[in-house]
Amino acid sequence: MQDINGRLIFIQEAERLKNVLRSAHTSTGRHESTAEHTWRLCLLAMTFQDLLGPLDFERVLKLCVIHDLGEAIQGDIPAVVQQATPDKSQRERRDLMALTKSLPPTLQTEMLALWEDYEYASSREARIVKALDKIETIIQHNQGLNPADFDYAFNLAYGKKHANVHPVIAELRALVDADTALRATVAGLGPSSST
Image 1 (cartoon, rainbow, N blue to C red):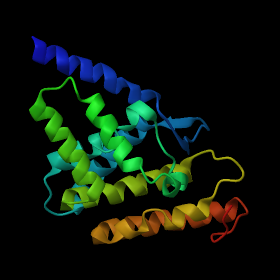
Image 2: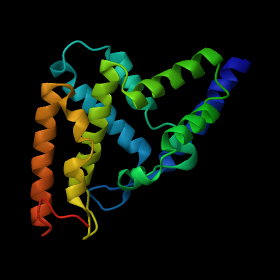
Image 3: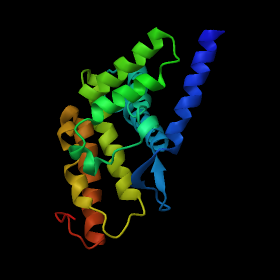
Image 4: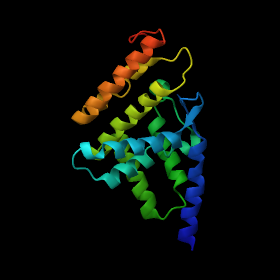
């Protein structure tokens, strides 16, 4: 009974991720939640699964679900300010440990190992998920009803180093970058401007 209760407590605590707002806007103009971003990252991975070659797809989905779970406690740090937050990784790891403390040790260890795999892009699956995570963020930026001063130029460089993990990912990234450049032009900012 204690084991089941501990798992239930974890699920109740993880609900907090639904309330963590990201800086991205939805197509209706409201801020998206981290849980919504995680859902669409899973959907993005499923959509391209058949084009990515042999992968442990169960692991891919677990990586997608776990990658931002630590944000449930202290929230999201927008990509544009992550460089100014050098302890982001350590903070998220601590928060994930706190969030999973009611789980059986083997399950807590598995979740932490998945998070670390994603964080350090250790496995092929983690490298794919990291690339898709950046792409999903940019897709949302391109779809969002953004403020007038939105910095589309940031998108063109964001996570670019992860795009060469697979030819399909590189092609997807090129399409998303073309959409970003178009959005920047329509917004009157030009594809290379920056705020």
